[in-house]
Amino acid sequence: MRGKKAALLAGVICFAAVLVLPLLTINRIPGVVSEAENRYLATFPDVFDGEGHLSDGLKSGFESWLGDNLGFRSVFVKLAAGIRLKLFPQSISDRVEVGRDGWYYFTGDHNVEIGAGKYKLSEELLQDIAQRQQRISDWYAQQGIPYLLVMDPGKPSIYPEYIASGDYAVQETVCDQLERYLEENTTVQVVNAKTAMLANKDKGKLYYQHDTHATDLGSYVIYQTVAEKLEQLGIAMDDLSVTFLDEQKENGDLSDMMGYSHSLGNEIIPTAQWPVSSTMITDGPLYEQSRVFQQADNEARGLGFAIFENANAENGTLLIYGDSQWTQYHKLPQMFAESFRTVMFMGLRAVDMEFDELVKPDVVIFGVGERQIDFILKREPFIVDTGEELPELPQTAMITAEEYGAGVGRQGVCLDRFNGVTVRNSPEVALDSSTRYVELHGWAADFKNNAPFQALYLQVGDAVVRLNYGQRRADVGEAYENEALNDVGFDEKLPASMFEGASEISFIGVDANGEYLYEPVTYKLIVD
Image (cartoon, rainbow, N blue to C red; front, side):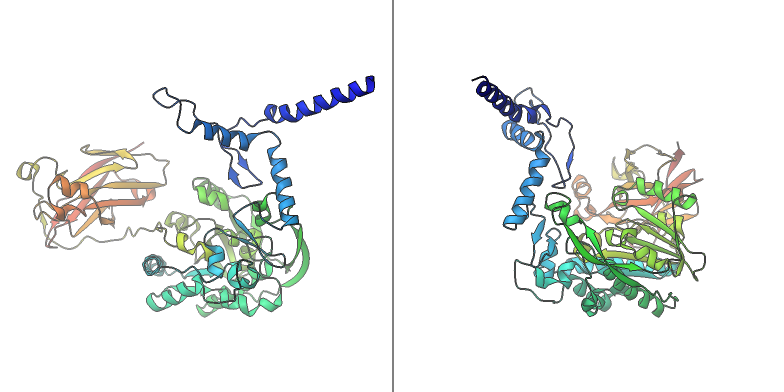
């Protein structure tokens, strides 16, 4: 009898523990990321709104928080992921598609659609990318620096036959479309590694089955394709002799997305080996300055940076701006370091003249994965020509506020914000000496002609920049009841180094007819 009571009591205690322990171990820390699902867990909802009433959606918010943060939740998530994958097989995450024969595909960024031929770049986006890439290419050409845009195809473009959601074959995809457009409409040096990837498909596994990235063999094919292009440009490249050994790789980024790190098990992949001549640098001035630069940029922080040096190489410095395929973990920087004395990889999503100035490259590569083309290549590069010259035109005075009416700014120029600080009618601007960039936002107009300026320049010391002028400012046109003044805005991002040692900045407008330079509108510059 006592034994039955003891067993019953033990059962009650265990049942109570099952109910209570998840509540006792509930997560109370906001902003926690679920490693199993690669997302932020729901935070505890606001109980009251700003007026003291119960918040709308309190019930659903509380349920989301409770479901996301109960103790031992991650254990159950991993268990569910494993069961679902092994028995059905199905992915617990809509970010991963289970393919055929042990292949898995990332579904974000139109990735599977690209391989299936269902996603193309619009004409408008092609034009936008072409204009930006031409601007970047011209910028480097002015400095005598070769620039290459390198596109590495996505796994679905090379292995579409393993996509389970359809019956697909190799076909033209986004990187082919952009390559053709740039070759027909620009002078940009373009490298599309897709043709070489397909030609080497029978040599071994070019992409991981459990990961979004190319294997060492795929990286080597990308390297060879780029090296051939550099040779055509007169840059001697080392004849890199690589051997490949089959090794087991456990885990992969798709495995993480599936529910937990070991859900997919091991796979055999070709691992590159060669007599490495370079050394990875982990200290020194360039390393420390690059780390500061990286820490100030959220995206660079995520991808990191790496420096390799090779005293025996013939070429100078190669700067690689790239995505995760170009990190040192996939060996592309090390391969190029056999031919360059310094190779710098930086995970920025756009070229940056400030970082160029730090590295002083002899060659620049911008590497982008196919599925990221449509949102990476439309980003505005940070390149500013500070060597502009003012037009040789006679100078004249702007119409005064008394003549035209109050609110025309200082001789037609209204600097709204300087590095986020409101300026308006103040005759001076302040610059934090620790900042790397200076941002200017405002509007300007030719009130003598009741029209936009033909051009607007900023002069700081001996440096002159033609500003990005003519942006939409319908508020100005409305204020002056003149639609001609709807497009008089400017928004500019400039390197802080341009302002070093300066005591003032001046705006200089060219009148609407291109006949005169208006007198400079000057602000005193105070450096904190």
